[in-house]
Image (cartoon, rainbow, N blue to C red; front, side, top):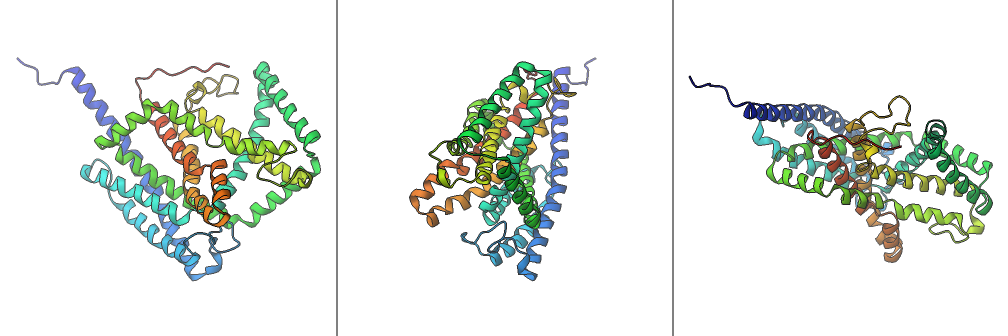
Length: 392
């Protein structure tokens, strides 16, 4: 009597496909909920800006100043209402396995909505605030890392503290950094953050909306044959893509390093370099270096498992979302700030504008970082790949 069961290999393959589809659908639904909330918030902000124009941070003198952009504050408010409502409608449409034919079209619509939002709300103010916040976090994280490694990985800790000593010596003896200057910078920075809290909230809502719509689009597009082929291509070339992404912040880091010499670039003359200005430049330069190092983690062993010198979590697998979510947020900030940065070429002059976009190449860095994060997420999702074990 012939068996009616499928061969084990076919059953396992079918079960694996069903499990993958189920996980994808759950992710889409979860992202859809976040997209719905973020889109409603964007629409609400746009309505508030129309009713109370003074609350619009895209007005002159605000944190997200777009006075030099092709959109004015009123147009940005209308764009917020339109894109926010479009997002609400799109979030309510099914994009899971219950409507398979809608998955890919709605995925492209999600990506298009993210692009429109990025163009409408792009501003150099967003990247400026993100750079300050990340630079401060990089300095704090660097100090903590040095302290921890001195006890748990002494050879690495001694190397790091030696590098820090060289940097401090150059900053103090060659460039004139003082504790008073650091204190003045910290006080001014904290005051600016407190004063611009509404703008920070708006930036967070906008970036969140763009990230979730981009992610929803990518997940949905992966169901198409072309999307799978493209994902396979970036996974094969993920090392090259990640290295290129890691090169994005390095020109800015090099420029800030010149502030430690008598020939500072893109800053005041060495005679006019005040301690608080120098502290600002060093913090931003540290953030650029940290961004490059963290990007390389997408292809290095410690991007798969935490280094063993880390307390409590050393040797454990790095949760995929721990790398993907911050990476996507950073890529979104870079991408939506790139058009505003490119438009500066018409205001600052062609030569100065080109130099600025080469020193801070958001137009290149943002897309490459997005591709690197995508490739990392897809690569980590391959369960047939053996886990890497980091050294040190």
